[in-house]
Amino acid sequence: MVGHNERQGIQACNPDSRGMTSASRSFTVVAAVIRNERGEVLLTKRPEGRHMAGLWEFPGGKLRAGEAPAQGLERELAEELDIAVEVGERITTASHSEPGLVIRLLFFAAAITGGRPRPQEGQAMAWVRPDDLESFPMPPADADLVRRLAAGGPT
Image (cartoon, rainbow, N blue to C red; front, side):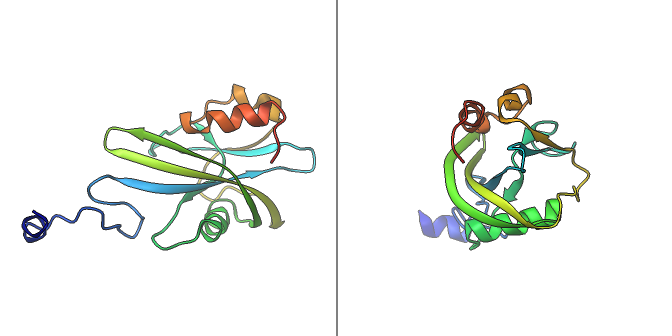
């Protein structure tokens, strides 16, 4: 019935400019674990009006269609925090799903190579000791990485 769906204008699995598909509403998010000289980890708080507003997260954002993960993470951190970074190796991958939405998350180690983090979208920001990470409300998909970092895991 592919031809029938095409005649009705239904396009399953054709990503839009945000990397989302009309049928599944799925996309990939890249996020950075950035540490300062004291070993603290950078978190930002999701602003009101956004999905999961009020939760703290590792900074990053959605990949654009055709964008490489490192390139997307560099772009997102420049847009959100006005910093340049060197993206290191991938730490882990996670996923989050709820009705009508699937998010794939790619977490990378990253180091600031230019600028100082300054929130550009009105979001709160904090440098947090790894053993304090679990006291910050964060999205469920971040839980395993948070536990790993709090336990002194490598990044």
